[in-house]
Image (cartoon, rainbow, N blue to C red; front, top):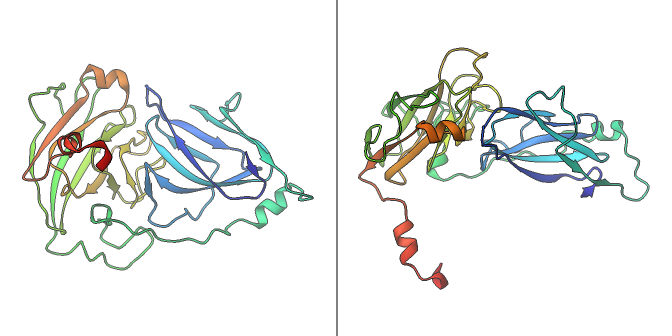
Length: 287
């Protein structure tokens, strides 16, 4: 429950074993919603400048939204938002005093959130040629001396890069590079029915114009699914693999495909492994 005309932060976590793309929908006549973060990472500018009522997301994505409603309303989550049936969640919006819930009042208040840019650690610094999707300032971390490690990903319902999962054999091996001007650039295809999920590292979408659905150019995600009707080009992402070494896991987020073999890992050498051993050895009181 929250008050009418009050901005609230709504965190939405999708958990669907099929990971199918569905429409998360609010009633645009009652509520406005601006994206704050995708998959746990703030947008490059918070909030998104435009309010949207429909967000096409996989069953593995997360969304943080700033929402404001003028009356109680539902939230729908369905494959076809036009034939949506009963809402999945009901938002209980209470009226304050003599405030009258009206669409005109709701529209008049649009755009009143002051935008801001989040501070980010090195591993989430933009890898676009320019500093942010809407900024023409040259990106100081992308220079003529920058070097990219290229890798291609393709999935079927039983394989990742033509290989069924093997706990003994990595897809490939990378040497960790600590240079701030080095990054990975991966081209990911066939993700419409096989949402690609990368553990440990978030991926920045660098395909011009983005990759459809919620995947904006310049923003960071850990699960990617590009619609086949958009085009046949891969979704191109970049990230720095300079924090954690060891086995880095990736898989299709459709549970049946993952269990059937659409999962793999790469070995990253020369870097610190995930800190599980260290954590297990620390006494609980010191954490």
